[in-house]
Amino acid sequence: MKLRLLVLSIFATVGLALLSAQTLSPDGLDKVAQKWVDDTFKKMTLDDKVGQLVVTSANSTYLANDTDAYEQLVRKVKQLRLGGVHLFGGAEPTAPMLLNNAGGGTILGQPLEAASLLNRLQNEAVLPLLNSADFEAGLGFRIAGATTFSRQMAVGAAGDEALAMDAARITAQEARAIGIHVNFSPIADINSNPQNPVINTRSFGESPDQVSRLTSAYVRGLRTGGVIATIKHFPGHGDTNVDSHIGLPIISHPRERLDAVEFVPFRAGLVAGADAVMIGHIQLPALDPAEFSPATLSKPIVTGLLRGEMKFGGLVFTDSMSMDAITRRLSPGEAAVRAIQAGNDIVLHSPDDDAALAAIKTAAQSGAIPMAQVDQSVRRILVAKARLGLHKTRTVSLDDIPKQLGGRLSARTAQQLAQKSITLVKDDRNQVPLRVPVEASVLYLSMLDYASNWRIAAPSRTLLPELRRRWPSLTAIELSDRSTTEELELVRASAPRFDAIVVAVFVRAASGSGRMDLSPPLVKLLNDITRATANTPKPLIAVFFGNPYVPAGVPQLPAVMLAYDFYDLAETAAVKALTGQAPIEGRLPISIPGLWNAGFGISR
Image 1 (cartoon, rainbow, N blue to C red):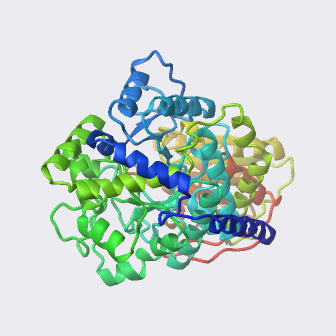
Image 2 (spheres, one colour):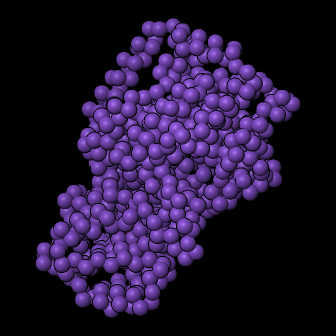
Image 3 (tube, rainbow, N blue to C red):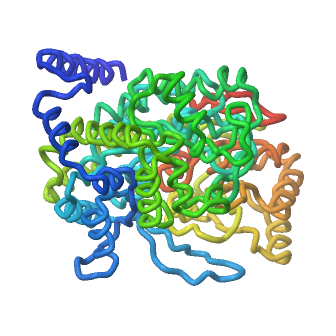
């Protein structure tokens, strides 16, 4: 790790030396780039300028030119002059079943299709597009075949700044390969509330110091890879118990507490060189006492605090304007105007781009939004595009993508990070790693929070075959909130007959779900199995994937391991730790109330 940091430091030093040898403008641009910014700005009409303040969205699945959807995107970037495209993964239509929707419509996007779409739109756009994405856990989080990294809380458990920086650098390089310039990452929120349904494992942890260090490392890594790092969700979304996708969170802390806790990682991220900030849909009465003034729409917060007190001169994005925290109260046009008036540069993912654009233009013409402010935002956007070299090259090479995305070297970094994050917090019977003979009868229980929407994170798809390869007599059972009383009784009666029991608990803190726990019948079953095996030598080991606070509901379990994430990467790391193939060295990045404090972990 020290060698990797040294190499990155040398590259950074050489880059700074080369830059200092040139004559740079106050914006940090060379003469050619600065001239492009100045010349472009002089030619821009009001429509050109207003268009740059709105970013539309698209999925990264195949889209033919001869489709309504593609023509709509072309109209937005060509006629409406929108400033960029926010890229999502893929989506397929599903029937919204009343009781269950096991698959869900979310799928991974495809890298070649994504790059092809963005290239075509770049060629249609009057000005280069500044494209963004939420690659919080690497491109593989949304794009098939790319590198997936662990969620930020797993990175916090690993505590390795060099690996964190390397993961961010790889993410940035893969993002640029498909035409993405802005990553809405890292999350600088401090998850100090165990009931937070929207941040949770997306945060590095609960310590301002640790979150600051890892936020800074991620910012440096993204910048090294050539991507704009965006710290979010300013001024701090960690201590909420409301999901802003479905309501408006209110944080009632006084300014002194905000300065001492919530603001700390954001200040660190700015010092590290973050070029953008995303504002959260959260209300903070200590900063703005108005009746409905979430940070996204608050001039005291965006202009007063971020621009004024913190002296931030980079790009400011709204969070998605399609979230219920905003749409329940304001029309798309009203919300867009208020966001710009507050001091945001870019309105992201409006539910109606046309309405947002028209309302901003009208407000600029009437003086409700000063033209000087519009001009300032437009120049920031143009400068960002020039810094990225988009004034010279807008598109990417499709032929180069297979060389730049995925691959063993990047996967190795991801695996190291995931493995280092696995945290053993309890092992009363000294049963980790699991030491039972190959012929042993092992019961594997997969317990899900609820049966719906597991499509791209199908539980146990890696863990189960790996366990069965080691113990061929393994019996696997999946349970969820849909399991019947008869099914639970059968498991309760048969579990003590097995030589060993491995329980994998999968609980999401998923945006928009409003849920983050196991159903009471599953909790009762776990407690009953624990009691039934308490006075026997039979191993009972529970591995928790996703929400790490769930063990607080089953405190009697004899062995508890945390993985903080889902997907194959987390399951592979958990299997290696469980079977003794890899050391266990993770440390809790958060406190689990009533059980363990942050920083705790048992080494193996």
